[in-house]
Image 1 (spheres, rainbow, N blue to C red):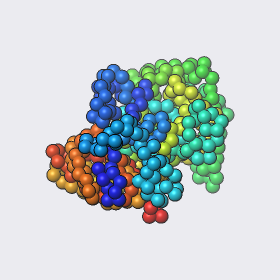
Image 2: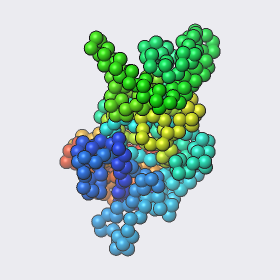
Image 3: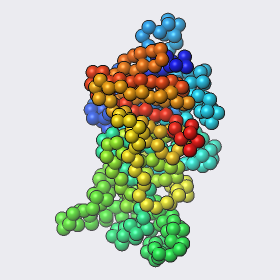
Length: 432
């Protein structure tokens, strides 16, 4: 698999995380991809959560040598992608090397979400350095982790805080929250004049106060409040249709009984992405993925500050102090059509972009040479990949690393071919 710059394309063996929120092997896209990518046997009842493509030490990829490679190359067992890039840094391109050093600056994933992930946020660079220094066993690297999720199926998430008007409605309609945060904090929110000049600052201060009070409530008070909420909603459901958010809260209570995250869900925007829509998350913004399959890309980091809907370590104080408390519905990306077959998703982060490519049988597409590396995932179907001096078959489950400055032609052969590509954000090279 050789590119025009003489470097070879590399097939990768990906890594899978079996976190307990993953979908079961019988239905997870992650399990299907794992079986195709590495021949692993799938256990139908085991959770398969995340399929990792990249160099992060918590899920490193290894190179798969092609048939017909030289014998000495064949004998090198399990060369890691990270190790190979360090030995061949020019595959990243000089601009990428200059900015991020000899490592891939993005991590590419597929997620299969069976039940809600924790309410979490990812630190900015400054906080990441501090957390890594103070608690290296919890925060394993010093990088920030902006990210983007692109829906494969309908994908549901909680993301960012609701508006001031919606927050006032929550405090009016959910007495159990007022019990936990206290009437004084609730009153502070209710009395903000939405037409005032300093409304945004006042709203942030009041939201920070009320959210911190809620998240810091004692276990005993939380359990009691959730029990009251559940009884009230079940009773009301006999008299009226519950709202989508109320139905969601009852689902979350089944997944995480007595967890403060059940109540805090009222504070967040409930987002439903259709296949082909994407959501991006900057540092210090709260979110929780709820269900569905998605492609995800992020800066190379695994730093997560959690505070609810989780059996894992909670760092409530850090989470409540790090959040921006910006309010309003997040921006949904529908992608930019580069051609009839390729849609590009460009988040406002230098480290990455994602392309979704759907090629009808018999059609071809050219990915022009760019000054940075890419990772391709063949998601469905079969096709041919061709560079300046190499041609090979690509089938679903294949993951391929493409060095910088390599033009690639892809043709769908036996059926429609669906591919996803992650690469450095093209705005980074164009200085926009």
